[in-house]
Length: 99
Image (cartoon, rainbow, N blue to C red; front, side, top):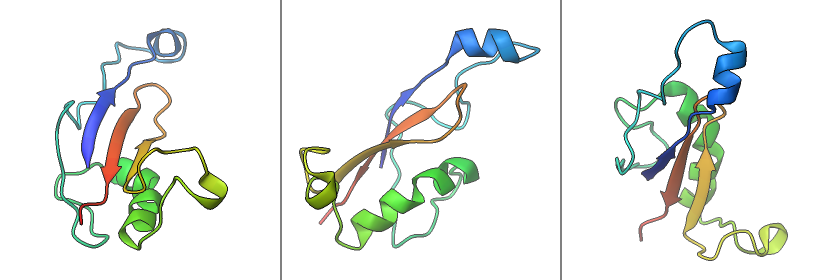
């Protein structure tokens, strides 16, 4: 799994947060994690893990996001792009099944 992007929705942060908000401090772009089974990697944000676990589970059990009801969603059967649900500073992950 690779951290592709950290996003900061500055307009929402200015409107709804009392102080300065920075991009998520839990991850760095380009950071990689290996997942063995369905166990959360050490030092991985609990909230982000809960948000992407269904995608990790699908790929690790042989599923994909390019066929059936997901036709046209992903180009590669072994990849899913997903993010955490933090509306102010989401992190986008590339989840990839390694054979």
